[in-house]
Image 1 (tube, rainbow, N blue to C red):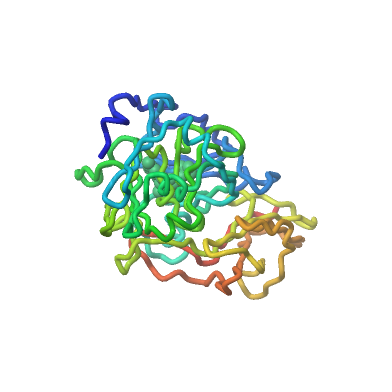
Image 2 (cartoon, rainbow, N blue to C red):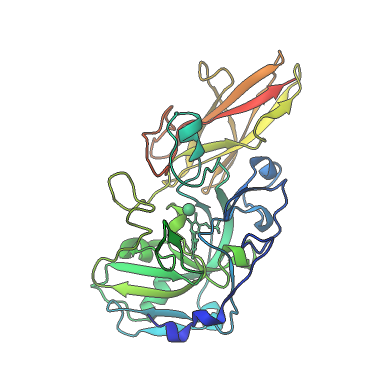
Length: 366
Ligand SMILES: Nc1nc2c(c(=O)[nH]1)N[C@H]1C(S)=C(S)[C@@H](COP(=O)(O)O)O[C@H]1N2
Ligand SMILES: [Mo]
């Protein structure tokens, strides 16, 4: 596995705030979800397209490792490359760079609504809608690195492995976080990122290097990558079989269409006043073309004004003047360029992945 070149013994997991994060975890920016941090949607109000690093969600299977970039290597090996080799941090940074602005979103984003809206709890982290962020990522195309290692035309799968501690579930050690990527996607638009929002990748987001796999479930975007196996035979891993697989057993790929209001849960609004509400909608399959909003539990819908149609997500706004005090439920429903629209119900998934139904966001009018 090339472990001689990137010894795990050199990596001291750093425990910040007692829970394995490196960044500060202020209550007004994050909701703690075990080893993960969910971004509060009210913390995105007034932000641009990109989510600042200090409020970007974190999904850690274990804890954030602190890695010395100078000791670190990216090892590319396997029967799918003719010239297995190790890259230093500086070598990677000197290769032609690419910059993309795309989302990383957890497959389980919205999981808790299987329970709260559909009455069927799914197992796993009960994310609201804050398991997503958009950043500017800069790095080397995975394709470049594979080609430098002498990629074989017979290669079918690529397996990036994380250097964070091994992950155990139900008493079973599943090893290091890793997930195979089909060669077609690996050669298409996958980035090996060393920068996030114009600075070095922060420890919690994969320093010194992570994959960014556009449009796909976040689990594909392996952080703290130290090793990439290239294979001429299909590869498997717990993160593609069972974990992050659909009810049909196939590894999850694209994300679904979702929408969220930049408002706190049960936010308070004054009656008899005009409010401009803001929100965002996104899809793993392309741009958002339409967003509609309902204030009457889905009886009537009106178009939202699309303010920034960024390919990663669309920022929108709507005006609302609630006349009477009371409890209301705001709904937003988006359609992407493939014609996919958010449904009223998401077919149940016992693992709680890909919840795409319209979310009813409670607000209190006083
Ligand atoms: N090595 C490693 N990579 C990982 C993970 C992890 O725990 N370890 N979590 C994955 C999951 S499930 C998601 S959703 C994204 C989250 O990326 P972020 O923490 O930068 O937001 O990282 C992915 N890459
Ligand atoms: Mo995830």
